[in-house]
Image 1 (cartoon, rainbow, N blue to C red):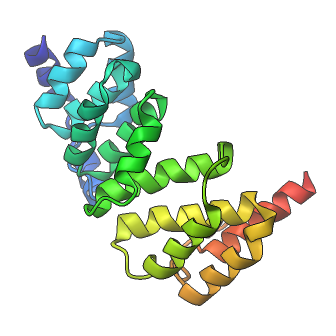
Image 2 (cartoon, rainbow, N blue to C red; image 1 turned 60 degrees about the horizontal axis):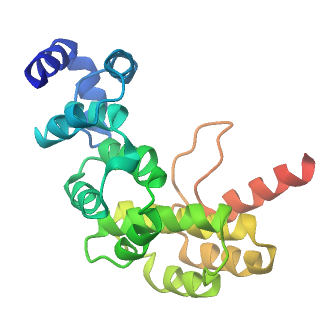
Length: 219
């Protein structure tokens, strides 16, 4: 069945889609809407998902994420998969569609948070950001701000982005740390000049925090 699915994925390959994806660091040419339609047709299939992941093909791995059963993976399996997920879309989908639904997510967050691989560490920071927003109990928010203040400016891009998101989330969700979060963002100037489309919120933390707080007050 793997061969049949791989043949179908090859048939969905589109050079224009690949060109667009490659601009964002990805290496597949399958339209994501068509990929989701294929996943819907295949339905949940853990064994097939594992075999598709093992091919190493990006489109196959995205499809695997869509048809897998997140809670079926052991902690060590997810750790290996995250370390293999080098392309942005695979990394993001694995984190959001699988790891966040896993009973091992908190253990993995702690494992990945300070990992020497910045891509893996970015996953740990993303999981931490979710806890900042949804379940901050027992998190050392002041300590997180210390690390962000010390390391974010010089962090590799993907890790820097994840740390910046955490900084903004602390400032948005926790009024007692808002002034410090704003000050850190202003001083470090990370993503200050990031191009932002009209009507969209800038990822520059001080602007992001201010805008989100304003919206909540206006509701």
